[in-house]
Image 1 (cartoon, one colour):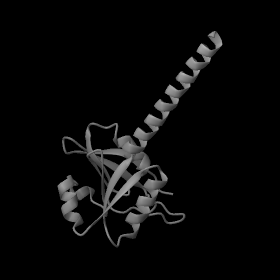
Image 2 (cartoon, rainbow, N blue to C red):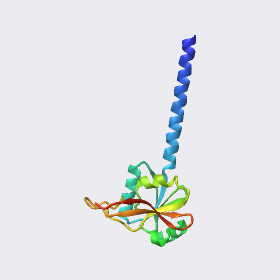
Image 3 (cartoon, one colour):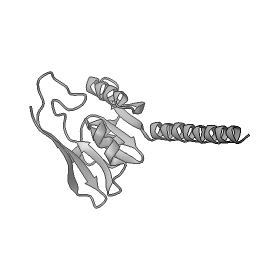
Image 4 (cartoon, rainbow, N blue to C red):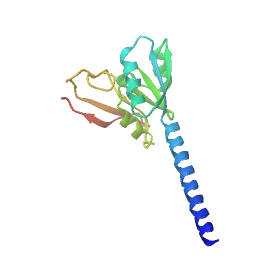
Length: 155
């Protein structure tokens, strides 16, 4: 009788742990959903989406006819502009931002969004074999100032 009780207690603990693991995995996937707004004919935008998907993001792809209006509505200032604009958890992600920086953005309550201005060669979606120019990931603070979040060197 005691062994059956211990076995059933162990089974219950294992079932509880499995439930918690599955629940947290589902929540993690849910939190990695990102809305990407892009022009229909932009090839680098499609390549950046593939980068996000390869890094665990679920991408909701929005093809837009007026990206300037989208950027303005989302609060992307012209100095941080690039070709596509994404939104995750209410914050903007502008341009060819690496997936790791987007994940880190969720921990930053002081930022409205992050950007890789322009279209630097070697950034995600702008890969050219053997080439990478130096670029920075810039955060736009709640106060409206720029802050360097990460730097990627040339090679």
